[in-house]
Image (cartoon, rainbow, N blue to C red; front, side):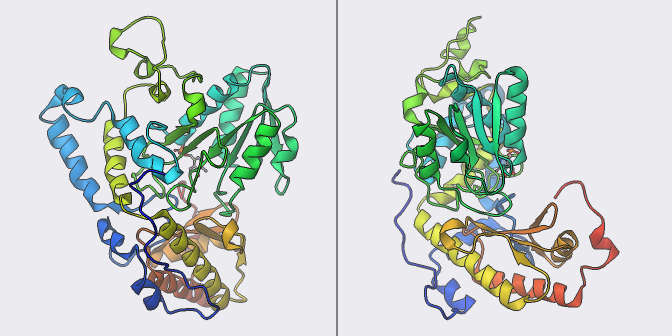
Length: 425
Ligand SMILES: Cc1ncc(COP(=O)(O)O)c(C=O)c1O
C-alpha cells in the first residue's frame, strides 16, 4: 500500500457490551479533526455521504483558481503550464492507496457507467471464444444496463443473473467474466471479493468489481483479492462533488495487453501526432478516451488530498462502530414502529451504510430531511443512511436516531407534503 496512508492511531470503537456515550466516542475519535476540513451546513446531520459526499472547503478555492486563473487568464496555455493533461492519472494515483493499489494502476474519467462499459468490453477481449457474463439481478441497475448495451453490439453475449440469495459462483461454468458490486447499494452487504474472484479464475473467467460503495469506507486490497478490474464513483465517499469522474483500476498484469473500445485520441500513444491509425498508449493512459474533465478532476484532486495521513483502518473501525451504534439505537429507540433492518447485522459483512425497510419509507425520509437529517430512499421501501467517517460524529448519530424515533412515534411523516414523490432522490 502507498505510503500516504497512515497506520491507525487509536481505536474509536467500543468493543464491550455497554454502550459508551457519544461524547466519549467522539473524544477518542482519531478522525475527529478531519471534520473541520468540510463545509457542512449548520443544523444538518448528513447521512448521505455514500450518495453524494459533503463539500471539502478547499475545493472552493481550487475551483476558483482553475476557473479564474488557469482558464480565465492563462487560457489554452494552461494545458502546458498546469496539471490539466496529467490529472486523469495523477488523481488516479491519489485514489490508488484507497484501493490497495499502486501508482500508475488507476485512471480517472467519465461516469462509472462509462468506465464499466470500457472495462467490461476490454475484459471480454482478454477471453476470446467466451461470451458469458455472470452478474446478479440485484446489482446496481446501471451495471446491468451496460451489459445489455454490450449485448446489443455483440448478440453472442449471454448474461447470467444470479437471483437474490443465489451464489454467483455457481453460474460461472464457461464464463468469460464475473461482474459484481462489492458493497450492495441497497443493503450494504459486502461480497467476499477474494473468494468470488478465485471462483471466477478457477472457471477461467476474469473478475470485475464495482467499488462505488466501498472505496473510502473499507480497507481494500484489490491485487491481494484477485480482482482483475475495478471501477467506482468519485462523488460518494471520495467527496469529488456532483458528477465527479469515476476511477478505473486495471490489474498490472493486464495493462499492457488489454484494449478498450472507446479508443479516443487521448488514449493514443501519440495524441498530438494526429495519426489516422489508433495505437494505444503503452500504459494505463490507453483507458483515457477524450479530453479530461478538468473542472471535475480538479475538484476530485483537491478532495483526495484530505486522505493524506488518514489511516484506512481508523476509517473502517469508525465506520463499523457508527453503523453498529445506529442499528442498536434505532432498534432500541424505534422498537415496534415498523422498521425492519435489511443490512447485515454482522459487522464483518456490512459496509458503510445501513438500511431499514418501512412501508412508509418515502414519507418518513422526507420528514427526516425536513428536520435536517438527510439520508435517502430507495424503492420500494428502503430508508438508507450512509455514514461517512471523515465528517460524521457519534453525537450526530444519536441525534438522528432521536429525530427518527420522534417522527415515527408522532406519525409526523403522515402529511401531504411528505408523500409527493420527486423525480430525483
Ligand atoms: C454501485 C453503483 N454503481 C454505479 C453507479 C453509477 O455511477 P455513475 O452515475 O457515475 O455512472 C452507482 C450510482 O449510485 C452505484 O451506486
